[in-house]
Image 1 (cartoon, rainbow, N blue to C red):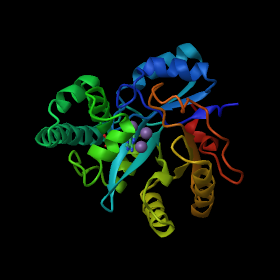
Image 2: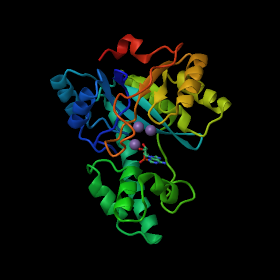
Image 3: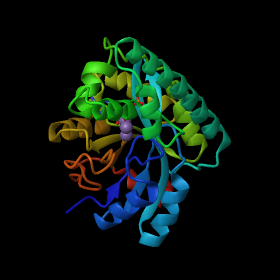
Length: 280
Ligand code: AMP
Ligand code: MN
Ligand code: MN
Ligand code: MN
């Protein structure tokens, strides 16, 4: 029985492969009752998704996954129930997309110098033209036969110490949280087990996040192991953060991940959907 909530998903408005309406239709077919679309640094897919959600009878939360640089590392903060019309939020996201444009050209130049030409052009064509992610470069390099899988591309080309690595210069943590809460949303630390943080560092991140107005953490994530989910449930309780759950779905190309196919929140967590402001 899939979890009825899936509060972290991507569409073609960022690095997902399903159009927003197709994503919502698939979520409905998978039994999801409340879906959030949380594209990277953009709410561009939310209007289409919201319209389809009405047709499908699915609860919908407009959302976003904001890229943050914290202590020299990239952290993702999900915003749930944001007003896409909020000007401060949109100005902030536009700044992040401007960095993405510059970074994409820079990644393309660096890869070309290393003997892999044409990746920028192909990544741009694979994107919706509004936002280029490293995922688009990964798909381009796989297509060009330079790697066997997207995962393989990240390891060989796109992470620190590799030829296509360009360090992130994303939003400050406090700004990202302020954009989200200022737009009426709830801020959530995304997939916390994915960061190279020990307990002390994670708690410092959480303290700064809470001081800025953040209230929740993804306890259950499609990118977590069952052990990660349990560990993060304990952290959520220790930190008095609400618990969220999301697949981080990017499309049917990852057949091991399905919308809403998530384990229940471990006992003792306070689910984010009990927060009245999140009613979809
Ligand atoms: P970007 O925000 O453009 O730097 O790209 C980050 C995105 O790349 C993440 O949201 C994931 O979708 C994807 N990603 C990051 N690391 C990996 C990895 N090791 N394997 C596959 N996809 C990854
Ligand atoms: Mn992604
Ligand atoms: Mn993420
Ligand atoms: Mn994500």
